[in-house]
Image 1 (cartoon, helix red, strand yellow):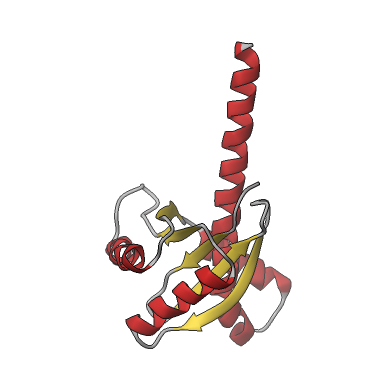
Image 2 (cartoon, one colour; image 1 turned 90 degrees about the vertical axis):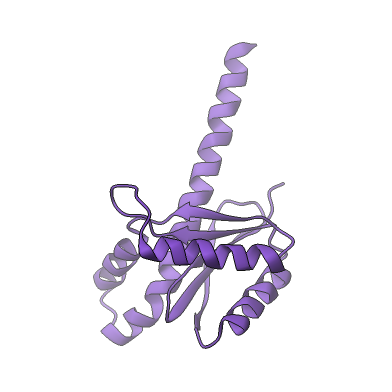
Length: 152
């Protein structure tokens, strides 16, 4: 059985969160955190990991469309290091290219107002980030199974 994964859409003003189901199939958005102090952010994440018994944390890595590091990806990497110091589980960076763009597109299409959309964007982006990770892991497991079956 898979374990729960916590995803973080890192931002300078807010952080969006999502958690997987225990089977590692679906992502569910959690409340967005309005950032105030780094110590409070880290404690909030530590509590989420504990509450959901997450065995892995993925942090959206905002690399450029060309695949290069950006100023923000450097800040995300530094934040990941801080998380690694306080969490017992692995923390990994995951390519988040276009998740915020897709989240905004989905929310615009839903017709909700701009203020609600602004508040929901980070949560939806974290959910899309986590779902892409879960789908990738499922595809990798399937590819491995198919490869093993072909070798028999």
